[in-house]
Length: 461
Image (cartoon, rainbow, N blue to C red):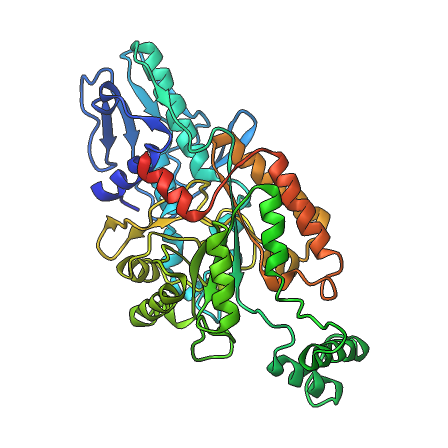
């Protein structure tokens, strides 16, 4: 892989989230292409050597006990960097290409590795191949580079000024509003067909029969029947008690049963959005299946939500995490969104782009940076509980691990929990566990903020 000037600038732009560039240092940068000889008589330079590898060939390095897989090593040397007698700083490996490969999502350009929903899965990823999904490796690359800068600066009496996004760490909670009616007539009819044996079922018929009775009570308004998926007031009250605000991404009703079964314009949804807005929660678009590759569809969804919300939604997450790189980003940017928060693996939690900071995507078609922001999604409860089959305690331990990583770099931990995954009869004890999990996260004293608030803070910087 050969890095163009634009790709190198892309990495340096993100590195600037971690330090305030000093002219004496940036003037000392020397990028060495593998085809070009090393200039003679160079002194007091910071030398980045680029690899001539076409594909990653991982070498594990260690820094303060942490394993750091470098994708484009230059040799078997396990040192991170070296200073020579002429005052030059030499980085031992190609951290720039390694960072670009992961941060840009370059591995996802291979369309033969997509699943039936055209998603890039964890099972196909380099993170799985070399077991580093739970570590924001790009942050570790940047830390090595900054340590090199500090070594160079000390040698030449230059002051290095670091910066972090958060003094401790940031926490962004979000909810995808896919389903709002457990007792939707379509669901109720399907359950009756399961009981009669016309449709298959994996649950016991007694449990399904109980759900049917609950649904009939709800629709006939008997004995105070409630729909367990319409639990938004409980969610709102919980978050307000804890002093946090989240983002609710609403899904448009479009062709195909996997999209929403509700309309933005329905009275209940309009009232809900009004309450969320009044209580300072954020409302965003949960883009349909079609919208991930269709600009017109996405614009229609954004405009429909804007009519109800009363202002332009700036954030989006794609339904089912369907994403086509870089097309979906380009559609989102053209539609006027400020940020996306879709990038995690649907089948595994962790760092899909190996970074715990917001970042700009890369347009491979035009070899340039895109201006829309990606707020990486670290944990989705479906990935942990359904795909990985984790217990509540195991999920809690994973969250604590991600918080520790975020704290190392003053970075971000983001969590998605669906309203329709908080029903105790489907997952015993889930509501109590969720409440306790949020309390534990808040006890770590994060800067809790919405996507819109995060974008505002980035603009100030």
